[in-house]
Image (tube, rainbow, N blue to C red; front, top):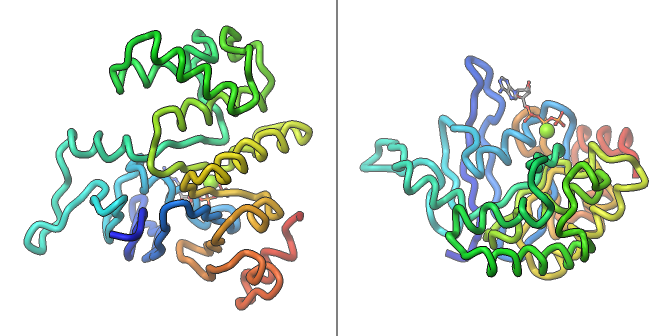
Length: 254
Ligand SMILES: Nc1ncnc2c1ncn2[C@@H]1O[C@H](COP(=O)(O)OP(=O)(O)OP(=O)(O)O)[C@@H](O)[C@H]1O
Ligand SMILES: [Mg+2]
């Protein structure tokens, strides 16, 4: 299959409230797709379905041709086994608004944890990978710093390094700069940009409109649980086709 990610007619409800109302989109390897849209439109929920932090009630998600969470078994929907689900989850990495680093582990220790516990690498090899990634995100020499000794921007870069060190096929970013002081935003955006330039396939939710326009291969605009508009970022931002996107862009900061 050519597409790295295929989302088909995805439907998700919390109780009686449907928050994803049939979402369709695809990504190819190396694509950088930005999801934009107003608060409550379903952006986070969509990302959380892709790595199955949320269950979903309808439609399908495939990563590299393999179903996420459920398979169609002779027309009946069946949940995959926990082992299959765990294997699928390893295909994605995620970074959130809140960095969620372990406070009692150093920067290197945070990155090494998944490598030793999940990938079963030896300590020396995991340490080497941690060092390489810390360097890539501009934190050379910070291996032994604890999260409390790092700025918010540095902590977020450790969190991103921790996720990419696991070599996921797809990276998910959910507003990774929203919790940061303004002067720390650009260093994190630069890290994300570097990863994009290295060819990492990325699906990101962002309120940084200029970043979405300059870095994305495609922008997806969500409104009330649906994709209202999608396409080439420069065209979309210059010439929105829907009234909703026009309104959203006019109230956004560039
Ligand atoms: N665990 C939950 N239980 C019930 N409702 C939820 C839950 N999580 C999200 N929702 C609802 O689903 C809808 C979509 O939420 P979601 O967090 O995906 O929006 P969002 O686009 O990421 O918004 P924001 O820009 O504020 O982060 C909202 O109406 C929200 O209240
Ligand atoms: Mg959100």
